Every structure is written in C-alpha cells, then in structure tokens.
Length: 326
Image 1 (cartoon, helix red, strand yellow):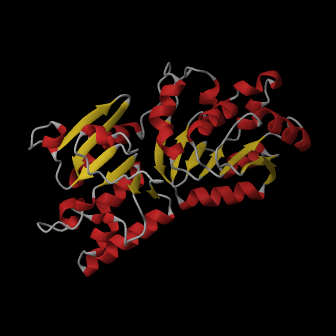
Image 2 (spheres, rainbow, N blue to C red; image 1 turned 135 degrees about the vertical axis):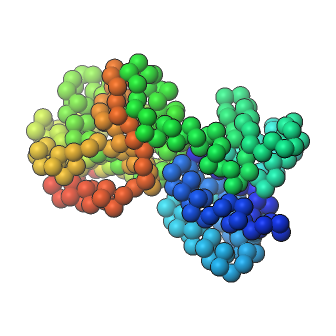
Image 3 (cartoon, rainbow, N blue to C red; image 1 turned 90 degrees about the vertical axis):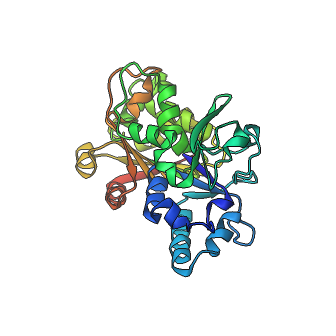
C-alpha cells in the first residue's frame, strides 16, 4: 500500500506530529506491515515533508530522521518519479495522478471533496481505483489498512480467481520491490513435469504476473530440479521457456538448484516469496498459479523479513548450483 503525506501534516503549531500520531512506533508499524511512503523529493531543501521534519524539536527530529533513513534504505520510502505525491487537492480529480492508496492530511479539507467538515475519514473512488482520505493519526483505522490487515493471514479460498488473488495479495508488493526471492522446493519439478506444457507451470505464470508490475532488478529461485534433467538441459529449457517474459529493469534471474530435496526441505520446509522487505508464505507455493481458478484452499500469511529468512537463503545457496538466466 502507498501513502501520500501532505507537508502540512507534520509540525503543526497546535500539537507536535508525534502527539498527533500517538507514537512514532505506530507510524513505523503501519509502514512495515502494509506499505510505502511516497515523497516528492528526498532533498530536504525541496521536500515539504522533510522540511517539516527538520523544523521539529531536536529529539523528535532525530527520531524521525533516523526512521526516514532506515525506511529509505529498505526501499519503504520511495520517490514519486516526477509525479508529486504530496496531496494539495482542491478536488477529487486532482488525486488521479497520484499512485497512493491512502492520503493522510493534517486537515481533511472535506468540504473541498464534497464531504461534511467533521468527517475525518472516508473513501473516494475514481474509475477502478479506491482511495482513503484520513487524518494521519487515523491511518490504522482507515478502511484500506483494515482490509489489508484482514487479508494478511486469511487463507486463499478454493474457487477464487487467481487474477483476483494477485490483485489483492501480491500486486502492491510486486510494484515496490527491487528484489524478489522465491523459495519453493517443488517449483522446478512442476515446471518440467509436462515439458510440452511448461508455459502453464506455476513458475511461468507467476513470472508472467510479476513482469506486468515489478521493477525488480534480480529474481532468485530456490528449488530442486536437477534430478529430473541435467544442469545444462535445465538451463537451456529455462532460457527458452522464460525468453518471452519482458521485465522492464530485470538484470538476471538466478536459479539456485539443489540436487538433494531432502536436505533442502530440512533447511527450509516452508514455501515463501520475498518482495523486498516483505514475505508472503504460501502453503502450496507457486502451484497456486497453475490454473485460472484456485483448485483447493491454500494457507496464506504476510509478514516482514526476518533474520531467519536470510540464514535459510545462505544455507540453500551452500547446497545448490547457481544458474544465471536472461
């Protein structure tokens, strides 16, 4: 989820930003769980957001600048690529150019948006896009955050269309990630189970969805496939079957192929996908993408990246052969 914050939302003369928000930890938790903060410029001399932070009392300023530095390093604060994400809307139409899902304003300016002046949180729909307009300290209670929190551990139901699952559960994450890591011991075997129909594999279809929205520079797959075919055949087939995929910024697809599925599962039994700072755990892994409609219920959970994940990756690399594609 993307947040756009109006400059006037920080450093109010009435109450400090931290007081309005309740705690800096509350803001950090929402960003870590659900989204990315969009700012118009990381240059403090130009950014209204950072100007307001710099004007805070010393201790508040230090805390905010440390958080900004940390989130920016994790890719959780991103520039808006020339499109101003600072909301100064005089009308709903002016929101259309901004890619945010939630707009956090010091004052809602509800009257400008045709809403009662005392309505501090409401939804706006433009075409096929939904926005939440909310007071900054009410972010956690906004409809978008509540819906995402509900989905974060809700299983995927049998009969659900995969494109709908992608839109609600994966699309936002794919759009903000510069690295994607897939850990699924069975993905390669299922990809080559029916060589003539390899394009219909969960791996291929997942990458198809990813190519439409992801700006990742590196995609890594940790799986087992060499006992099906030789390493050279595996690379040749993957190169051919994935050749048609078009990623805008992708530099390489790195496949870490283990010859020992038992050892691999001892290191990491779960199947999960890392999108930047976020992790999605899937009971059936990439297998869910094999059909247009989910054939059976699948467990799903969403969390932030954990040090244990990095340890698993290091161990999987140790027992795998690396193959570079693209």
